[in-house]
Image 1 (cartoon, rainbow over the protein chains, first blue to last red):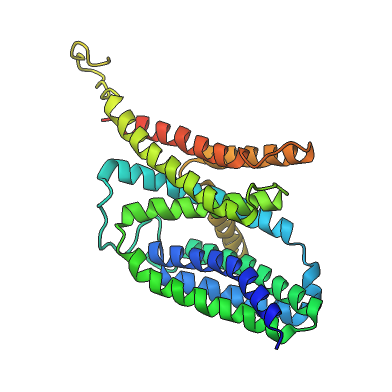
Image 2 (cartoon, each protein chain N blue to C red; image 1 turned 90 degrees about the horizontal axis):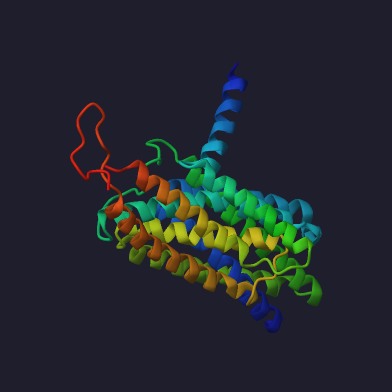
Length: 249
Length: 71
């Protein structure tokens, strides 16, 4: 057992696993747990096939274009959620939606394919990155077993934390949750798309933290701005009836 | 015929996934991605562009949405 490889792999994989678990929990809580679980499962099957077929050649898989595609697809979708969350919270308040099962109006009564795709993309991209870390660390020190144990420990510990946090996340009122999840999705989308475009993020992987803070602060400001815009917009003047004096001001 | 229906449903799914309620948000994000790529190629720091563009696109879209829902 190579302890230094085990610890290095655990720490490096944990960053990727946190992103993976965050996406799955976000999709599960706000859209559909069934879609989130099946999306994650499908991604894990794909990863197992890729690892089986490619083996150590996995190190040569170009991750940059993959990050760009996943990030670019996540950005507009996350923006829609952020927009809907801001509109709902500014209209109905933060506490609206407690106890609701679903958030998004477009979650279908049948299988939620959008939730499936979101979960699949998050798990396949981050899982691939974990696999590359395992192969790279394992190959460098000829200690594949230690690298696999380090990554597996990371998945188990962060996964357990994700399951535990689900109960806490489920207590957040649904409209507010839509805003928070929208902020999280655009955070990951921005980071991954930027990585794919070779952007040099200040702080490296810690950019995820300041990006999340930036988007959350912007969302809170936009909630106030939308409330203000609503109060300033004059009512629609009915055609065919004489408008009362000063109605258009 | 069944293949055509599947292909159509597949395309519509992705259009709805990307475009959603307001196509201008997706369009602005697309332009921001291209501009970021351009800045990176030119060697100019581009990390600020995507976050600013996403927030600006959301603000613009929200302003239009509020105007549409006026009483």
